[in-house]
Image (cartoon, rainbow, N blue to C red):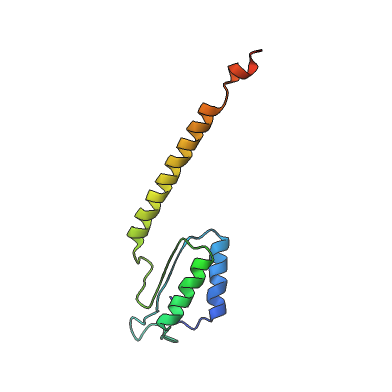
Length: 116
């Protein structure tokens, strides 16, 4: 949540720490004060600033970035999950095919040990 008084440097530092710990997904949204008993909004982040943060996060290697005033942590989570599960499945299938091809191309232990 942005708009709580954080600086741009603090946001960038948070991105760095998240990537250093292999976090792949980040969502950025505007903090909205639910009631007067809660912390006040420090500032309203512009849509342009959200776009800048999104571009920066993507350039840092996050696999998925949702950034905008109305974004919440579950924003399009199901879509992202399904997309990435399909990608992982495709990668696993390719890896299995490559392993099978490598095994078929490798000479058997008996052929290597047998004198010619």
